[in-house]
Image (cartoon, rainbow, N blue to C red; front, side, top):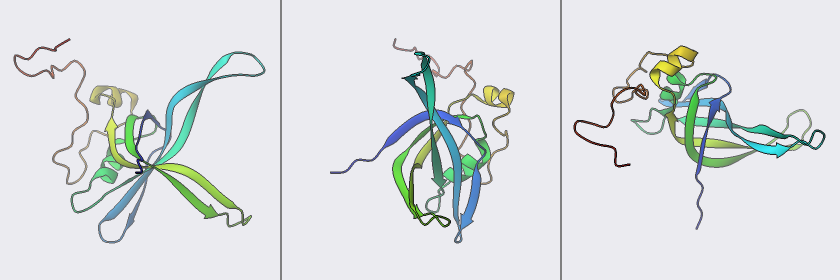
Amino acid sequence: MNFNKIILIGRCTRDPEVRTFGNDGKVAKIGFAASPWRKKNAQTGQWEDEPMFIDVEAFNRGQNGTLANIVEQFCRKGSLICVEGKLHLDQWDDKTTGQKRQKHKIVADTITLLETKAQAQQSGNVSTQKPAGQSTYAPPPDMDDDNSGPGEEIPF
């Protein structure tokens, strides 16, 4: 049995690059820096944070697929997001040297915006316009909103 699922939280390192293909196909590519891990600097002996950089691709899939549209509209350099998807290894031959090259990337199944609308607007990371044809998507609500529902208490 094979299982390939990755979940990472981090920030976009660049604005999306969008490409269309076929009649309705679209892919949005972003750079992504995952939460840092710590390593000890051999020269100074100090612990340092080192982020992991990886490319992410989001596709519009099927007739109702909208993930690439959402990434194009709402993700900007510096946006805090959670990416869920599959790890994929790209392999190719370098055109200039002829050497075999490879790199890992994430093919996203879902991307969740982790900043509130107010935080994103304040930092300038997210557009306030709704993507074309998106009637069910909204950025995360402001943190000071009461999201518990009428008469419901948080159980902890």
